[in-house]
Amino acid sequence: MNLTYQQAEKLLDEILSEGIVLEEQQEVIFAVPFPYLIMTKSETSDERHFEVAAQNCHHRSNGAYTGEISVEMLQSLNIPYCIVGHSERREYNAETHEMLADKVDLLLEAGIRPIFCCGEPLDIREAGTQNEYVAKQLNESVFHLDASSFNKLVIAYEPIWAIGTGKTASTAQAQEMHQFIRTEIAKKYGGELAAEISILYGGSVKAGNAVELFSCPDVDGGLVGGASLLANDFIAIIRALK
Image 1 (cartoon, rainbow, N blue to C red):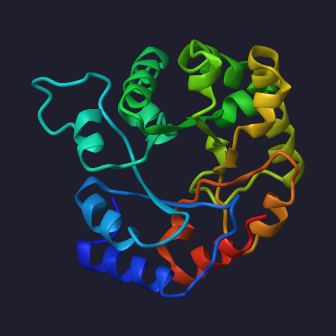
Image 2 (cartoon, helix red, strand yellow):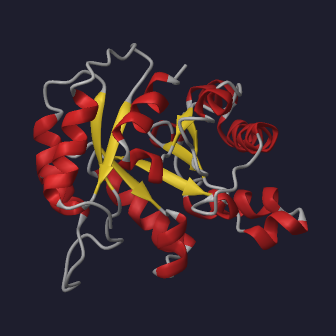
C-alpha cells in the first residue's frame, strides 16, 4: 500500500521516459495495486517488454467475497501476470499451500502467468532447514502441474528474513537457494525445462546490490520491493539485468 494514484503515475512516467530498450530475453513487470492496473496497462501498451502484474487474486473463481479480486476480473483487463503467495500474504492473510495451488490453477486456466513466491523465515534459516521448507512450498502448491503448465510459471525466492529488514542474503546464499530450486525443478520436470524457468531473487534488491546479485548464474532477475518506489533506483536495477 504505497503511493497515491498521482504519485504512482508520476513514478511510472519517470521510469518509462528513461527510454530503456530491453533485449529480447529481458522483461520488466510492474506489479501494481489493483486500482492502478488499468492506468499501468495503458501506459505500457506501446512499450516492448514492459508488462503488468496484479499483486494477488482470490483462490475462488467467483462469489460473495466482498473486497476480493477474481482471476476472471484480471483476465477481462488482459493482465498477463499475477503474483501468488507473497510472504506478506502468507503471513497476514493465512494463505495455505492448498489455496495457492488453487490460485495457480485458476490463473493458468485464464492464460495469466503466475509469479510464484517461496522462501523461508529467519527461524527456519537459523535451523538450517530452508531447503526442506522451500521444497515443501513447491511440492504442495505448484509441482502438481504438468510440464507445459509449469513452464509458464515464474518463481520468486524470498528469504523472508531479508525483506524490509535491511538485511540481504549474500550472493552465495542467493545462488545456493536458486540452484537448489532449479535442481528440484529438474528432478520433477527435467533439466531442459528447469533451465528455462526464470527464478527471481526477492530480498531487499537495491540499486547497489543488483549487479552482484544478478551476476549469480541461477539468479535471473529480481522481485523488487522498496527500491521500485524510487525511479532512479529502479532504473538502475533494470539496467543491471543480464
